[in-house]
Length: 393
Image (cartoon, rainbow, N blue to C red; front, side):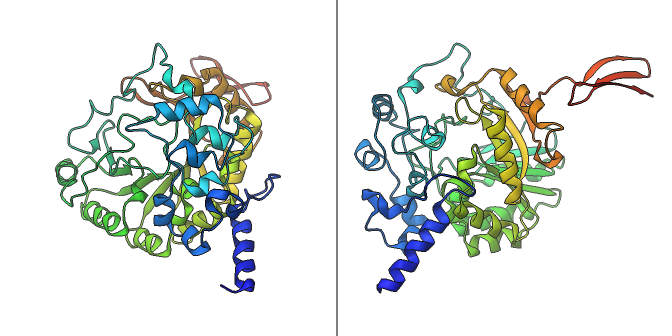
């Protein structure tokens, strides 16, 4: 490799890895000892990123200063939801600050061992509402298809930690047969959400096969993919993949964003590729204590999402899944965030705050109370400034 090429590649990496509009100093992955000899072409290969995920304390210690709480968490995070951090995500973590919002989402801690009194293994009762393998049917006209149990990175607040993680997965072409037949037989189903795990972690051929089978069902109108890949492994968004999504258009994509630092220039490139292929993008955010539970952080996130053409859709109350109580905020915190967003910023930047009703109740919208009283033909309302108005029918 010539010196000029090396310099150009280094400049490219600095450009795409620095968080957009952030004061954080750009971090070239080659500044990290674990990755110092990695070829830029390998770095941009999503298969390489997966193969070289950070899985143990020894490798992690070359990236961050591991705390005793993290060391204990890594020891206990064995089996299904073990630690798995993409090299890309690792470059975004603060090496010194254990409260770094990027780091806290990825590195296990001893706090995961504590189980709260109201926590459950399957708080959304998805297993109960599964009429066929890989399928959840709760709402009348839509179903959730869990296409894979694997993710690029295992988020420590994962709701499906009972399913997602390290284990052997059935990759046979026939594994979705029962789910597809169920959808075919129920003509009320017009909306299919493909999630997981992360469905974009499947190979291109597997994704195309699944989209094709669903698109062939005449009564399915709306097709969605739930993913975190543009955030944790943006190298996966390739021209070939976007052409597949375009082929089976319209396909909507919901992306899991939690913090403004996740919106790097590299993430923006991935989102641009999706949008420019005709894929509408929405966001889903989990409210997490110490990560995004301040109104100004959530507002900044929503604003930056709009700038990369991602429409804020949901803020979720963190589900009461076992081992996540250290992430959960009071509901009042979420309501306060909505109070600070509504009327104080663009309507497009205001998502819906929801609680997934424990035990399978589905998404329940929660927000500030703007209706103060109502009588026959008369509503007394308040606006975002607290001023009172009367609406007469």
